[in-house]
Image (cartoon, rainbow, N blue to C red; front, side):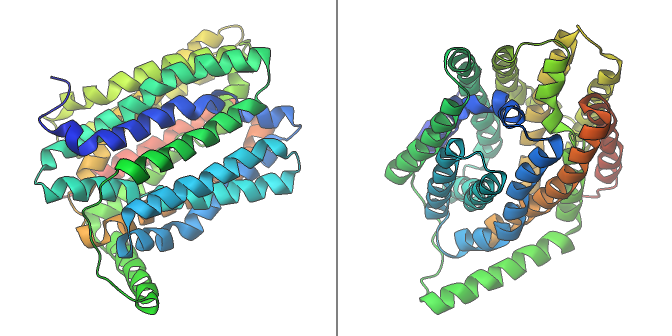
Length: 396
């Protein structure tokens, strides 16, 4: 059977959330092209996306502590509403600085979701002693998101062909609003923090922030997973270059939608294959997948026009390997985190990641302008070597 006993009873609102999110991501295959068409350089685009990361870095710990000290459910819903407003306003703006501001707001919104959503689910399952559903959730949530994303780019490609990219921003914002509505109505939360007055709540949030951050950097396994994750993220330092790279190889802009649809279909299936690695230690399974990704990405250095379909295959398969790795890493990671600071620790992990993405994104923007996407995408894969070394040094 596809679902275990009572799995949908506990998880259907969250699975629906991921499906809606996947269906609303029509803008993703065209987002960088949208900014290029506005006349922005790679460096300016990197500034925009880095602003998102910097905002997440600054707000991850406080919002994670808010979720731990007040409510995971209302943290997630607030995050959806903030992100929806920011995304819906983007197509009305062409000014670079206003776009920076909107991306900062979107980043703040995501911090209310990041960590809180996973913690909400895991603690719900733990209350009913269903830790057997942890990995099922990480696998199927990503697969359902990918299932929705199979159809989104096809529809997006048609809208881009006959209308414009702008309309896709409104669809994305609508997805956030729908998720806020459904989780408000149907999402049950069983985690109950202590009832505190306003001043005490602020103190509790500050205390949780300190505890979560200290735990993250002092627990050897947790810190190693976080550190390795940073170098895994650096493997795609040139991520903003994918869409222009494929177009420069000869792919039509509207065909990007079809590539992303195929990618989503692969991403939908690949998380299930992570179960094939259960006979290996998690650190070894993750290391093997990183090595596969390195080989794939470095092969881009040998691809030239008009062989855009080969680059598209690399992009699709690399995304598939990422989706296979995520359930392994997340299931492994949650084994070491106390529930009282779960959202804060996850926010710490995300905070470190966003800081690295933001800072290296700026550097990548300069390099993309100077050397082009092909070299940056290929040589960035070598950061995987450091990630493998860190994982192999873990003693758990």
